[in-house]
Image (cartoon, rainbow, N blue to C red; front, top):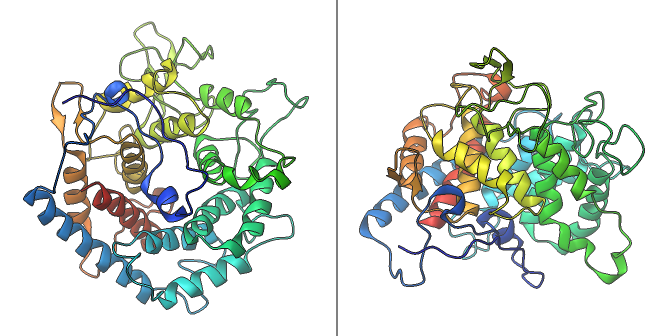
Amino acid sequence: MKTRPARWNRPNKTDSSWVGIVLAVLFVATGVCFGAEGRTAERLGVPSENLSLRNEVERAIARGLAWLEKNQDPKGFWTTSDHPAVTALALVAFQGRPGREANTAEPEAIKKGYAFLLDCTQPDGGIYRKDMPNYNTAVSMMALLAANRAEYKPILLKARQFIVGLQSDFGERGKADDLFDGGIGYGNRYLHSDMSNTLLALEALYYSKRLIEDERLAGARDLNWAAAIQFIQNCQNLPEHNKQKWVADDPKNKGGFVYYPGNSMAGETNLPSGRIALRSYGSISYAGLLSYVYAGLKPEDPRVKAVSDWLRRNYTLDENPGMGPQGLFFYYHTMAKALTLADVDQLETASGQKVNWRKDLALRLINLQKGDGSWVNDNGRWWEKEAPLVTAYAIISLEMIQRGL
């Protein structure tokens, strides 16, 4: 099967369907990155196997959303009012539900959730309560974009400028004189940049970029995207582009990502040369790939190719590669997002096997769903024992799969 020429799709400035933009995906790559079979215009109809699976996926989504409705706090938030990001993820899950376009009745849970988010807006433009202003603002922006409501535009513009202002620059403005320059961290007391927060910030800025393309807002300050790329590069195990001493050049780690320069949640590894390097791991490597794309790198860029190859070599649903069960659902979430955005139908692994990742991930998530409709990780790292957070991750992943079926 032939694949498309390598390219990324950019948001359509005239498209008013922000739900489609935010949830369904905007860039397209060929097998250049993942060794994938792309879709063709000649494909007509839906295979019966896909219809059956799609029905199962839609039932799992409906059960998950029903659980979220039942477990929303009367004040409109999920889990805790201190972190509106969890509520925002739940709202994104509701906005992406199958059949949403045909059903004009908006669930009460959505109304209460957005009322809570709006109550979290701050005078500085951020959307947060006490802590982690970038994390909460960036994820909340995605929920507001998914709502596609004109009255949210002023809030989004202020939130966008707030995130832009959080970009790290510890020296003279515009000069990358620190390894953390160009990236974004949690904010507040969390001073340095990291890949997770940088991903979330770049995603929110990427999908909201058309808001500042209005002629009246042409003077709005934008992110230093070149500096952001430099920070992302500083987190990649790729010696051709990253000269730090910890960078690994062995086949197990080359091309993948670490959490921030000098630190990997997956720990260290001893190379055959006797040098100590940092291990790459799955969820943050998908974060690296997505960050490169949001920052404008092309599929043929060697940095994009390198991380794509690492992800292909390390494809598994049994664990978050390098981390075991830690952050497993965030790994599924970033995997589904990246492979959907890359328009990958079949993923070719390092052994040459072609994997139907949608089917495999869908069945994995369906089998992990609890009897009450929720999802939760037995491993509590990164809040993954919080059922609303993990349930939102799972539902959003299944919604991307459902649209691909």
